[in-house]
Image (cartoon, rainbow, N blue to C red; front, side, top):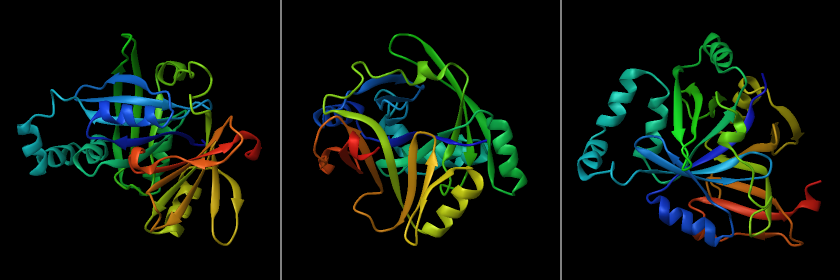
Length: 265
């Protein structure tokens, strides 16, 4: 059961501001819809992966809820349930910026079973849904562990093409095409490499004394010891002829570099 990279989650204070920022960077940003108390927008790439911008629905995030959050009551309630909500609440009760990443699998129950057999602290999976802006209801399962050393996992219920529709024009206005590589800044690179190799069953794309690069579906994933300029660094292929980095001031804690597609072949 090979895990495939699915998406990166970025928690933002204002979804409207984040949409404006990524639009200014030249991306097509699609409004995803609401999951109840949260709403999202997606930056979808041609290889069917995406960046998720996630925020509280403004009407939900009242002064009372902010006070409850500061007191840690939300997290306490989630921890008592022992489900994947424990992990998800960490996203929207902590710091803004990149907060987690997701891999998709064909059989979430079997994957979680193997992790539990390996004595991982597995959280109970949950069924989720989201209503798109066009009224379509999407459904999927999420699961994982309490540890952020491994990504959380997703199994689609409704067709994946409904959750990750293709780009309108096949490319973003800035020429971005596919997400090729993602690098995470971690506390212990050796630990992250060992866990990924053991529990995600990736292909080893490249390996040397400094870096191991894992092939997880359409995306290459690697880990680097902190500090890095940003917690997450992305390499995105583009239709242009020159490599250039995008403005970090607008990318909400991630570093994005556009690289001509002929250099990634």
